[in-house]
Structure formats: structure tokens, C-alpha cells
Amino acid sequence: MGSQTPLKLPVIDFTKPDLKPGTIEWDLVKGQVKQALQEYGCFEALFDRIPLDVRETIFGALEELFDLPLQTKIRNVSKKPYHGYVGQYPQAPLYESLGIDDANIIEKVEAQTRTLWPDGNKSFSNIIQSFSKQLSESDQMIRRMILESYDLEKYMDEHMDSTNYLLRLMKYKGPKTTKTKLGLHSHTDKNIVTILYQNEVEGLEVQTKDGKWFDVKPSKGSFIVMIGESLHAWLNGRLHAPYHRVMMSGDKARYSIGLFSIPKGGYTIKAPDELVDEAHPLLFKPFDHVQFLGFYYTEAGQKAESALKVYCGVQN
Ligand SMILES: O=C(O)CCC(=O)C(=O)O
Ligand SMILES: [Fe+2]
Image (cartoon, rainbow, N blue to C red; front, top):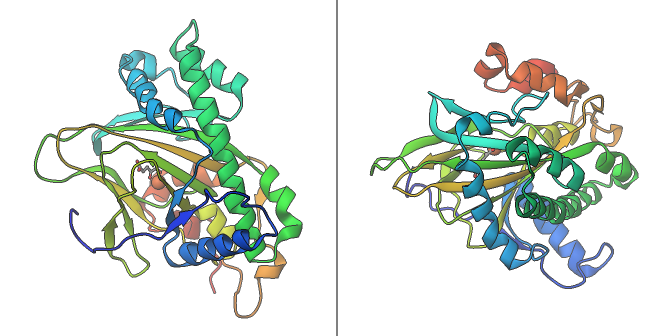
């Protein structure tokens, strides 16, 4: 909490012109991505696909959203657990969030916007969709690099087609104390890749592989890319899915946005044969992400240190 381990995440620059597969630039960045994800499970990323004015005005859209009455916000529901409105939890009193499923697809965003604003809200749905669409292209670029790094090109189309995008919009109230208060409890993400974007209020902390917490302080306008447990499992443990949490202090609200690439229900996550051998025995039995989430949100799933290991871990 606060000024603990003075560690700075690697910063990876994706803004170079002509960052295309097959170029020297691409291979250099690809190497940095692999190294950062093996070591920390996350890195800070510079992307320039999303115009600066969108990056700045999107927090205004979040403010407008969270200023809606609670009765309105709870109309944001989803069949999948943790995809709709989450908040008013005694264990996390500062935290509130909403989810937009298939946030890169305009018709889907407009329909979900109408549950909040019955007459629609064009400026809200447009900014949410364009932010998500551009960021989903960055997600795909990073996943392409990861698959190439492990010589898994033949799975590229299947892998890309097996996910959809959830955008979560989050608000953490300032606790208005000098003492640090929990914003969001320590967890690993359960999906494939998460890309986080935040306003100027810090609070995200990540745990290193050897258990030390450190503050993540992205520079203005940059993003945090993080691996979830579904990718960790699919790659048979090659990349690390880090524990992280949010700790809050001060008066100001933290707004953050997460784009989550999530395996579709019905798609079985199974480590490719290429990644399973004597030195790397299979870590997880094949599983369905949506069914796993069902377990994760049970009492047993919440209690487990690693819900995925309890659910489908192989005893080696
Ligand atoms: O607000 C943040 O920066 C982190 C959010 C997060 O970890 C999550 O939604 O899974
Ligand atoms: Fe997370």
C-alpha cells in the first residue's frame, strides 16, 4: 500500500508506424510482450488508435453514467455472472461497476444504452463503441504476438473467433480518509486479456510472482495490459496471470475502464498439444469458461485460493 516496492512495469510502445506482422519492429515488440507477460503478467502500453479527445472525454461519459439513480443502474443485467451492474457490496463499499456486452458492436451497445436511457444516448453509445472497437484491435494485435511467440499460428483464427468483448465501466469513490481503503479485493482475471484505462486517480496494485505488491502508476493516456487465467490455462502455464487489487485514498473518485476478451460459452479451452510435454505436463483439464465462472461465483469458488485449480486443475 502506498509507496511499497518501487517497481515500474515495462512500458511497451505500440505507436510505431507500420507495426505489422513480419517486420523487424513487430518482432522486437513481440519479444517485449512475451518477456513482460512471463515475468509480470502485465505491462503498460502506449496505443495511439484511440484519438486523444476520445481518451479524454470518455471519463465524462462515465460520470454521467454513475450519476444515474441506482434504480436505473441496476437495470444493467446480464445472463452471465459479473457481466451486469455490481455494487453496494459491504465488503467493497467504494466500488461500483456496469458492463456492456459485445461493446465493439454498435447495435448491441445501443440496445444496452436504452436500458439505462430509454430514449437512447447517442454520445454515450458512440464513444463506448468506438473506444471498445479500437481497443479490441489492440487486444487482437497483442494476442497475435503471443500466439506467434509460441509458434501457435495455426490456431490463430480459432483463437480470435473464440472470444467476445465485455467493457466494464468502474467507479471507486474516494474514501475521504488519509488511510488507504480497499477498492477492489485481490483477484486474478478469469478471461483471456484485459486492457485497463484509468483517470488520474491511482490505486491499482499488482503482485509479483514472489508475492510482493507494487503500485501501478500508468502515465497519462497509457493503458495496462494484463493476462487472465483462461489464457494462462490455454498456454499451459507459459504466461503468468497476476493477482491485482485496487486500494483507494483521498477524496477523488477513480474511474477505470476494462476491455475484457472473454471465451464464448460453449468453446472448450484446451491447451494445444504443442505446449504439453514431459517438461510441461498438462495443468488444467479442458473447460468451458462460462461454466467455470458459474463455479467461481459459488461460495467454494470464492473461498479457493485458485478457483481454476479447484475446478479443473490436474494433480501432477
Ligand atoms: O480498476 C482497475 O484498475 C482494476 C479493475 C479490475 O481489476 C477488474 O475489473 O478486474
Ligand atoms: Fe481485474
